[in-house]
Image (cartoon, rainbow, N blue to C red; front, side):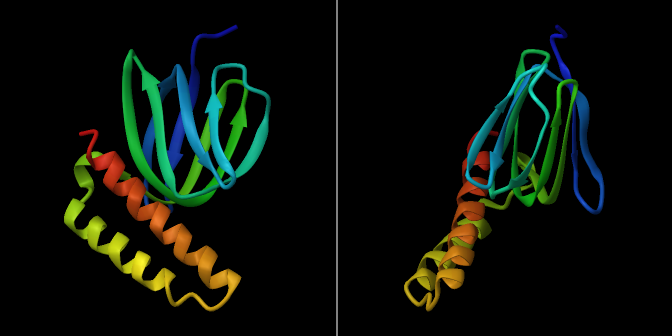
Length: 134
C-alpha cells in the first residue's frame, strides 16, 4: 500500500494545493473525515472548517468553506468555494464576522436562517483557528 496520496485543493479561481500527503482531515457537512492512503472511495459535501494535512512530516492548515470532496484510494480532490492559508487571514476581520454572525443568530426566524447563520459562525471560527496556528 502506498504511503501517500495526491491531494488537490481547488477554488473557482486557482489551484491552492497539489502535492503528496500522508494524511488529511477534511470538514464534511456532518463532521470531519480522516483520510489515509488507500481510503475507500467517496464523495462528500464540505462544511465550513479547517482542512489539515501532513506532507513531508509537516502539518499544513487551511480555512475552507463549502464545496465538495472526492476521495479515491490514491487521490483526494477538494473543490471549495473559499480556501485561505493562515497567513492570508485577517484575524480582526474574522472576529468581526464572528460577532456579527452571533448577533444575527438571535434574530433567526426559520430553520433555514438558523442553519445559514451557523454556517457563517463555523466559517469565521475556522478562519480564527487556522490563523492562530501560523
